[in-house]
Length: 355
Ligand code: SF4
Image 1: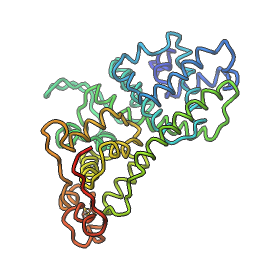
Image 2 (image 1 turned 135 degrees about the horizontal axis):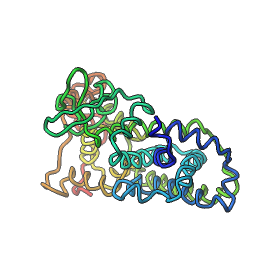
Image 3 (image 1 turned 45 degrees about the vertical axis):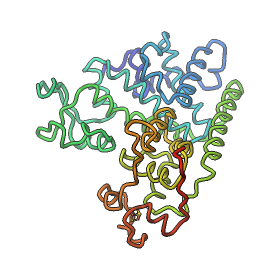
Image 4 (image 1 turned 120 degrees about the vertical axis):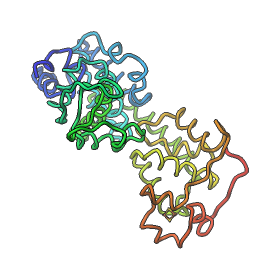
């Protein structure tokens, strides 16, 4: 536990109990942080919020998260609860999710380069993961193993094959993992923690010194929403089959979909004649949305990149195999493909071009 008590540790990992206690012991309220002597804390908090909203944590991912930390560790630490307050003041679900993700990515990149005993202490003492030290040479050297129930809680949401339990080394109920993999598993728990902290703050009115910044961020969020709504104004899910409506609804709420579900929805939307821009706009509510990546993937499905094959929508049978068919097709009159549903029950207007 002592390992996690240094100022360096709590500044790096402000989600720990020690960090929270340290901040409370300083008895500095949000109002006071507007004083000139705290301007660095305010500037750093603004950076954290802007980094999240504009880049979704990419600066932490591609840069060195340690280098982005403020050299003054107290500034670094105190900027976290202040940034949480600012996000709560924005009162916007997308902003909260985006901030949660960015902070979790920040922590993940720091954890990946951490001493094994520190990451182990954080995983067990702070996040309650059932972890044990091992020494095993398999396809690579493993020094950690996690109980399979904790492993599955997070890894079952990942798409990549290497996370599937059947592709892992499992012994006596424990899955062998590398430190980097453990950091990835911890990212999701940290993200949930950050979201819960924002929710606990609730509706707050920003103090005077913060109001201009909050207004600027709200305007940007509003402009973004307007852009998405404008792009998506031609989308009418009324004529879509229940499976595609359900996937679209999940995305609108900002939930993440499996790789296959994303592919199924994107190929469906393109095949009913939506433009690449419109399909990109459908994905813009995801907290990890990156327009460049989304556009590339959608253009690939549309046959504008890579093999130049325009992919068709998976059949109802394949949708069922992936658990995405609704009520076993009872509402769909025996169609064999979601596109047939639109042809039969809706207005289907195929387009001559992909964009
Ligand atoms: S039957 Fe086909 S179109 Fe209908 S919900 Fe199932 S997968 Fe979708």
